[in-house]
Amino acid sequence: MFDSVTLGVDPGLAASGLAVVAREGARPTIVWSDTVRTPSGLAEAARLRLLHQAVSEAVREHRPGALAVERVMWGRNVGSAMSVARATGVVLLAAAEAGIPVEEYAPLEVKMAVAGVGNAPKETLRRALARVHGLDGVPTEPNAADAVAVAFCHMQQVRVRNAVGARR
Image (cartoon, rainbow, N blue to C red; front, side, top):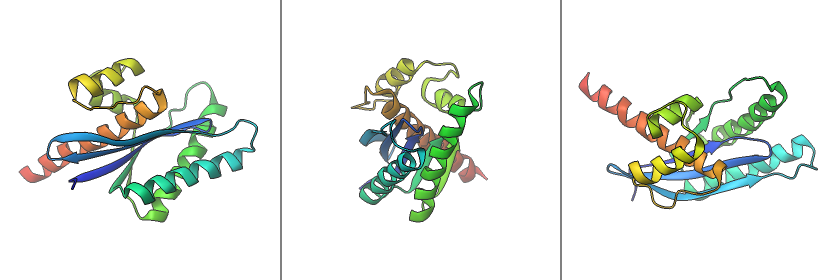
């Protein structure tokens, strides 16, 4: 039915965005999206288990050919970055268990692919996905919308790589 299916992930310990974006020909379609929230009262290991279960279930249900995840950016808040790094680890584990290739993209790469500028705010990304790229049903929830953007970025990168490879 679809030429390619990508599971995009915006990882986080408190909230992670998940989105399945498929492409048939040149047209991308949002198949599914969700935000996985983990209760703050749980131990970190239990929260990571919940995220792993959600990603594994999304992989089983949607059978993506690739998983695209937003790369952790190490800023001033090292504690927050560590939590995101751990969340990313369980996402990568779920992909490895399913035998799915993973690509990581920096936030700048995602913003450039979607909006054409590296400092685009979240709402600009959402609008670009809908208006510029013609995606219907872009989620209003920021984490899920970011996951759509990550999956879209991956699909754009694959198309560029394939076009360049075809010219060699």
